[in-house]
Length: 193
Image (cartoon, rainbow, N blue to C red; front, top):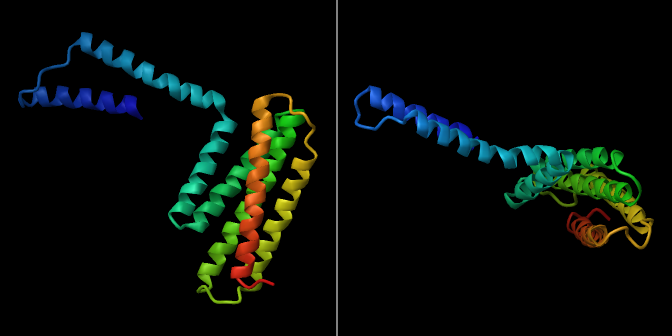
């Protein structure tokens, strides 16, 4: 936490002064400035906590993307699964269009989770073709979850209540279409048909 780092630095300067290292002592006036600075740093942290579940959903999705960028499908599957749970939790707190949007997001995330699990299983099996029934079964679950996402997106009322929600729905539709293409490609690569 940035605030604690500043306080630790302040405490280190006091210790070094007592040990005669030549560092100057941070007086009470400086201490109040440090505390004021720390309180300014805490404001964004409090704001992030207020955002709550939606911020956590974004964080988990970013962690999953980072894991895949680092070629770690196990971690990506775990974080995507957690993100799906968070999307379901957010959906329960919403109404109307936004609720349906988060429900569709949950289904897309479940599809991604199953796909990442299939990739991890394939790797553990030594990348042998054709892929095992477990790998192909995970990809079938991914397709099923993606079909649910497509259904929820198709049932979204039009027009959207706001331009922001319309943009989110459009991005979700594009992500679903792209993910469908990816799953089909993996199924062919893993010889699951």
